Length: 186
Image (tube, rainbow, N blue to C red; front, side, top):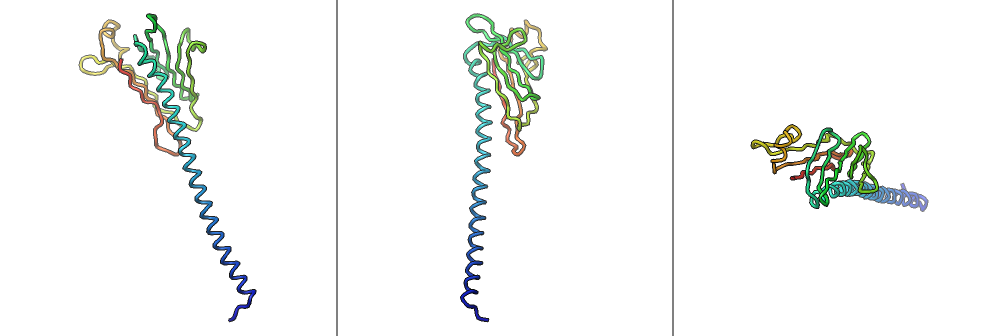
């Protein structure tokens, strides 16, 4: 069978179309992969930045002021009494997993004082927040025990105390924990 000019033209069109479709598919896959990696890096950067900002707020106060007392009576918050300019200042760290909120600031009469010092960060709605653990431990009789279970006179005499804030924060598509893990010796 012999092809005429029309036959060669159809064959060339088919070959050119296959090559063009293959090249277009390759470029489309390349663009989608780059977009997915960019989205992943954006989420990671956003979460790591939030984690750093929240940790920094607490650690700045811990390094600048003396901690007088830490009181934990609820799984979602901890009260820290700092000595600032020879007076006691109460600050509270609140981590609410239902509202997906982190709050830190001066706390008086069951409210945060916004005009003094207050930091609030809302977690992204796509994040899964679990296992909030706030523990206040005192090194007593060669082991760490809950400071709130000790008498005040015993608690005041102990020099080695440890506050632990642990919040597991994960995304739906990654096993990476972007949560807060702070250990404060005081």
